[in-house]
Image (cartoon, rainbow, N blue to C red; front, side, top):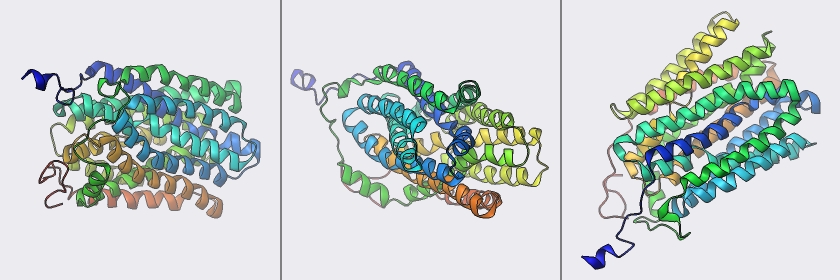
Length: 417
């Protein structure tokens, strides 16, 4: 008995407290996502000052989303093997460098490298896939969906808090100086990462896994439900990033003041605090696929009504509030169902692949918005695409199977996948 207890391979590492994981994880997501959600406020100041087209700015943000998705896969792999702490530290440094580069880039190419590639890589290491891996390893399954809802709600609160702050910084300091201030502020993520240092990764050695990375990937990508969840997440990315980046310019084109757009983005963030938290709580009680389908169908309806109604500040605020309830509320149930099906050993990596699909959708939404605007003079076509995709995503989530996958032996391919 004593030989077993003294074997470190047989002794589970001490987990972090729920309060510590949520406090530090939520604060990191608040900063990272909060800054990111305000990038649409820079579209017109930067393009006007630099003499660039909207497509130039939109392409850089599209690359940012694609970079986030690509680097998110590798950030998840590293976090699963060596812990989240190191990944978050690197992400904070890259974020600061990217924001400074975004302010000082003289050409569209350099702007794409900094605002696009660097900040995208930074977000991969400081947002949901990595934080949810910590939650999965330290919080029991009976509270996991709720905890993921809390972390997602923190990202939404960051939007509510940071978007008006960013608007104030732009108006009072100028767009370049505002980015430099944010570059300094984002370094606060580094000390917060100390609270997510896990004992099992303290030695710097890779964690022991019953499945290899290859086995986990083959299992997931052969499983139809994983493919359906990825398809739905693609739509989520397309919708939210198109709206988040292009809605301020859409409203200004329609004659509304910039303050209306700032308030609208803030309302999205405020109401998504409630929407994401509610999705996390409901995910402990009802089928997560039903939550996801309802969210996607509801988005399609809300967008259609918004376009059909007369445009005014009041209609914008109502639209923003309703979209806020649905904004990132897909995140907790999607990640929770991945953990429920496949377990937590490779949760950050699988979440990274899932998010890569989301970011391909984000790339398409933000880039297509700029491309079609420059060629048609409006956003109507892209709005209609968002409605159709909402219906599609609602349908593909209905047949998802949430039961834990059946494996023959630990590390072996699944039965009936």
